[in-house]
Length: 226
Image 1 (cartoon, rainbow, N blue to C red):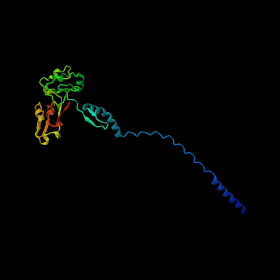
Image 2: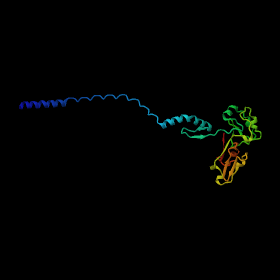
Image 3: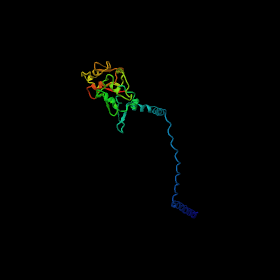
Image 4: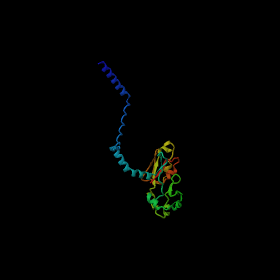
């Protein structure tokens, strides 16, 4: 009984020792994950839908505004400078029609007795230098050979509209000034109530004589061309 027990003990110990000397089993290679399914774009929210829709609808409107007011890009940071359209001579047809009809001959500039019309390169008026004097018979219109300037009555001229900036006006600073009203050739187009300059949009023809007469820089009253 004792011999069996001893052999059994030695056998069992050998088996244990044999198990310990066996190389460890290698772990099986992990299975490759299946190809991930392509990510689906999240459905457009109601807010996103309307944003995209209105962006498409308003795009042409933005382009029209930029064309009308002529915003020129200054730098890559997105800063813009407002460049107003040119102030055309009296009797000028609509913008597209004027550009098509005017052949840049300079006849209107040559006919202007005050030198108000300059060619740079097309005919326009710089009111800060010399406004339109609304000459009797409009020699500039009479000289135009292409119809870019059409006959018009003095009180029907529509070149632009004077805009007043009170923050620049001498009168608002307590200084006596009525230069713009005195220079205006149209009765009642510009009035001054105490210190406030009032412009009648129905009477103002946009000649720019008020802008020329304004004594401050930058001008407190300027013409916004049509």
